[in-house]
Length: 496
Image 1 (tube, one colour):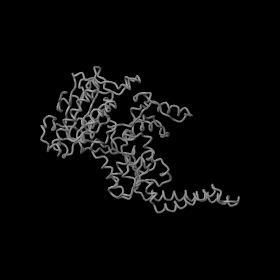
Image 2 (spheres, one colour):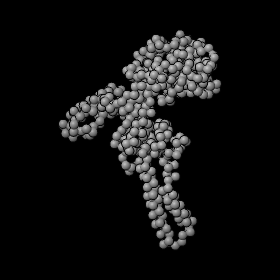
Image 3 (cartoon, helix red, strand yellow):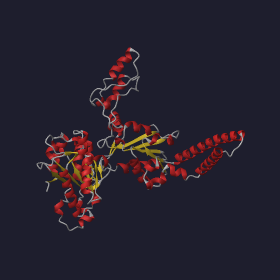
Image 4 (cartoon, rainbow, N blue to C red):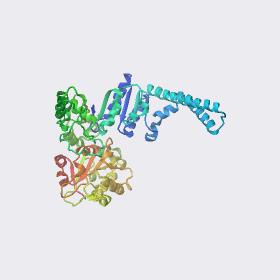
């Protein structure tokens, strides 16, 4: 297991592992939870001249990678010329039969027998082309679900299966490619975004869950079944050992698991950290941007690479050559907090959500924060920062819409999105709009530490946070510590 916190070069590490495995003449199956994740690896692999085959529908694969798809390789294979000839012969014969050109009962019967043989021949040769290409490919890439497709049926077992972003994938999806290889490498970060699960279990995680055993037949089996039913789901790390101690004769009995728990996390829970490698040096963020996530999420184990640890916006060429008064936008500060406490900049609920009556769950927005961010972007661009070097992140889709309407017309290069869409991305400047500002201390999505961890680790040189400290502090102990950290370490500003 490769635990790759933000900016630690997890993808580069995977590429190097794949290259070393190829040098050992291993066949590798590389998977990701999405087509984009798979294509990101393929793009990096393609520069090394490695024989690769990308499975999947061409329409879902990036245009510059089409030559490495199975469809392209099949259509340009020498063996495929014979397949084309057989197919044409079959089509011509079918057309003759359909048009009534073949007369006589016996001749038509013989023609239909020939059709059957041609179909068999076409199928046999098509499978032969597929098997030939798959055997030659040192690396086969596909999505997790794609690994269950017909192209990989009856293929020789792979030496190694590599799954990137495994902590964002559902465990059942990961099991599809796992069954096709002798060894497994999982990469991801369980402290960033989890798998997307819309359905929630009826019971809390810490409640006792039942095991699904076979129907007990004897009194002894009944006793074992009753004991297994008392295994606590929150103790999944010891569940396997408990089961083996209670019922060594029934190792197939497993406790129910939440789909929110990834295979990566479950394996750590069972085997401990002995099978995990932590990438501890990050190459993205200024030391001060990294500091709180490292302390709060990674037990202070993250360190910043020397070349990035002190870099600020002042070192950007387009900023350094600008004669504007740089103090106005605090270009030298890696961490800026614009605190709206006391300004009555309250959040609102999206009108469409109000119509649905979903007041509690409705997407929130904060128009005042939008105006603050728009002015901040103007200041940054005026000082020499390009709009394409700025990203704006917020937890709420309604706020994304308002930010797009306010900022995009003037600064089309500025990237604006929700937290869920930015994992794996980075930018020179990141502005976080926290949105929540109310008298009750409700913070909604901000309670999700992993989601917040993603948002605060996208910036390279400067992270700007816009929010109401009084509201945020009341959300959770984690948020209170974050606000305390910002008050002690950030450049504190107030709305203009």
